[in-house]
Image (cartoon, rainbow, N blue to C red; front, side):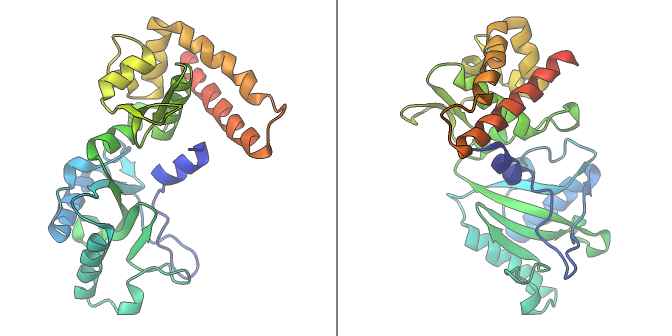
Length: 272
């Protein structure tokens, strides 16, 4: 997955709902308001949600939206969508103002990709403003929580930066591939080798590493610097190969430059 595609997926930032002039209708939510708001969402959806937040939700002073994992084997997108629409209808909102369409973006409910979006009243109270909630439908909630993990204010880097440097490190291990969606894989066969975070850490960083060492770009680079500097040197040596445009198509040049950019960005953690 390309860097910008991953950023768009996990860093939506609450920009789905807009008024006629293009102004975003949702706002950032304070950390103290997050759990009460998610508990309110549990009441109207009938789902356990508080322990299924993704990314940096609850790890920063404010969050741009609420990303929450939903087990798609237990409930479908259309069911959640219908429950949210039903709640909005009970508030007396006209039918034509409930759902986002191509021409109408100031509704309350929308569906895109793997997500259902909801313009959520903070703590269930519209007077407190609205935050965008993204219900993300996944096969394995625990894998999604690890794959979309972010250290929040504890890191200068995003969860996307952390995940994508893990992907580059996997490339240094011969035939390994890391996917935030599936786990550690065989690059040739696409076979999933493990989704266990400790096993992934040991494979990517070296024996003795645990999931805590994959917490952020800083923790990853610190562990390698102390315990496995050869993998840092591999990352450095990979940059000129990625920048080389010989015999590459334009699309591949773009992808390789994105990877070189993120490796250089991660290496800066060693200087901090």
